[in-house]
Image (cartoon, rainbow, N blue to C red; front, side):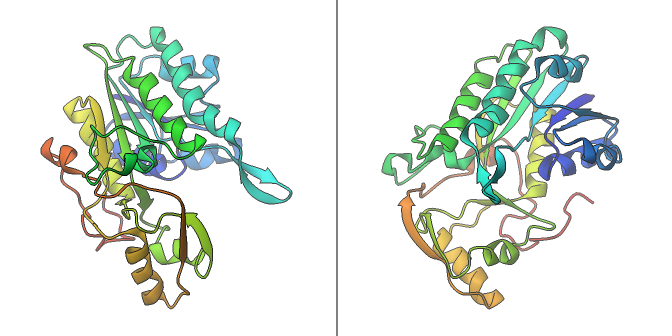
Length: 287
């Protein structure tokens, strides 16, 4: 199949290499020209573009069977420090979705769109004790609202031949993203997030495998995609900090998150996790 991947920073990069190894013809995008040579090693075609660029989007998706949306964006610099720009963030997601949908006429053979969204879309899920794909989202920030808007745009484009799968993924870990190194950035600090909300984490390669699963099963609808760890953030990352000899994290709970989130739907569809209990944290599970 011809597969276009929009965004190839971490998960998209691994997906490109893996799916190409399976015999698919892979096109990837990047907004950074200096990454073209790196990406050419894992893809048959590299397109330097912003997702919201209609002309480039037409070039990208023409003749494609599948489009995978694994983009991230919005991070810039302000006063010499990293800054998440709300307008750039929205353009990276909503802008990309709008661009894709406006250009579908050049891709009559397109049969599958898969978007990697985020469990942050649930916000506090209205205080629900059990959260599944039927639970109304209650975004706690404009950034989380972007995920919901993108999901709705894409889902609204589904037709009988063209299926749309929205994955709400957990925080992604894996090779080069060990929990201890990620926790070290915030150890000993106060952070605004809700330590009582679920940990909601997932191995990068389970996300890649989920993308393949959606393609092979022509998956449609919304699915939560994260592993079987049921600890809260405070408990789980408290263990991580203790084992790594790091100072504990103080969770202020200013931005509430969901609790009792379920991943039963994707399992019922037949998907199995390669790292359900985070026992292979930094392993490459796609070899």
